[in-house]
Length: 360
Image 1 (cartoon, rainbow, N blue to C red):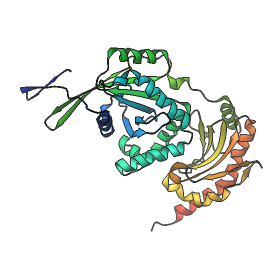
Image 2: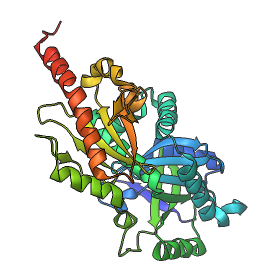
Image 3: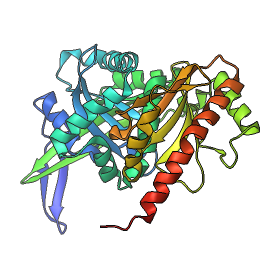
Image 4: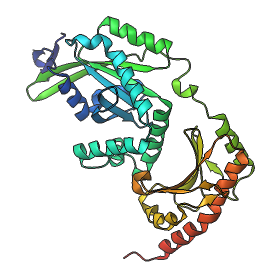
């Protein structure tokens, strides 16, 4: 264990020896309270990691900690102490947890509710509020983070952090080998922990960033060809005055330019379906839900049923009608045009009415 030297104004130098973590739980608790100690800024300048939850339950056992960054990337964090005999299997264990998280988290809304519950217990606010607070952004900006989290989880794009008090050469070599020869992103973080009087000193070092992949996992992802044909067809036959917005591989937004950002139509590719949706995603438009619920059960094109999803976006709600991606794109585009036709007037009238009502 390497000691460090501290002094005050260049005098009275003292040797401080490394202090061991006695329990893995202590290591988990430290990163949960001090997420800045995980040096993801070495992956990308100014990148920060928010450790959202500890002991997240999966079918393969509890994940020690789950983190996210401002890009919506997910991090499975596995902590191990050097003295523990199962440290040799730590990479396999982390991958097993990641696979379980991807395979069995089929209900993203339920996943978010778990994060909300844990964040409420720890911080007294819901998950999105804490994300906005941690990254210093507006609440509305968290919607795009949540969307990318959903996309990454659906695609199984997860990063892994192996956090230990000491990482041996064999484990470092294995991390480099896996990163070089697969699309996984695995990083080892070694914590050197010291105590001096009332201060705690952590010197983290990250391994695995040395490997520069010629093609990243994100670049490997591509848009579904059926969804691409729908986008292309809409661009040729748009709703008057409504161009497609967004460049994600699973969604395109559609909205009049005079509407608030929190309300929009959306073509959403999910589970081999293309959903024709109308989303409410901010508090200032949540009141519209009372007027849109009446469309629950209505049919688009005489056969595709609209449902009101009251759990979406922190219970602000959405209208959604799933349609098979294999249908002719003209049918799907006709469906979103019909949804616009039946709801736009209602929304325009309610937005106008609210804007003309004096504040109390």
